[in-house]
Length: 136
Image 1 (cartoon, rainbow, N blue to C red):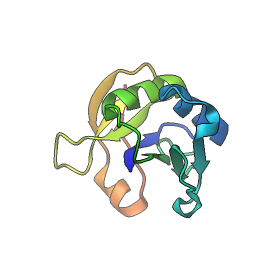
Image 2: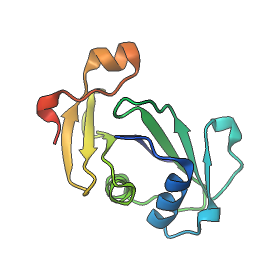
Image 3: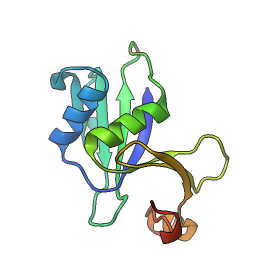
């Protein structure tokens, strides 16, 4: 079951992701699989599927799956803890609105704010671009 998706400010390598997700969920790193295609999932307790990654900010998307027997912690709090552990900001879906361009920006220190991404960039180029006046 998907726990949450996050769009990272800067790409993180597999080992960093594995270690931070393990720390986030108080697990051994061997309990966390990091894969680059959903077809590579092997039924681990926790799987992180990594997509994208370029030099552009907010280009790497990570989707964290928890096995069916694991309780799902709060998404926003989990995202804030992950941002602190990774040392980079991230975007989470803003489920408080139906606006598909509204996201929760979590800073590397865990501070949360609501931002809108550029609709044209997201729709046309699959890029999460935050207008400069909104960045913190």
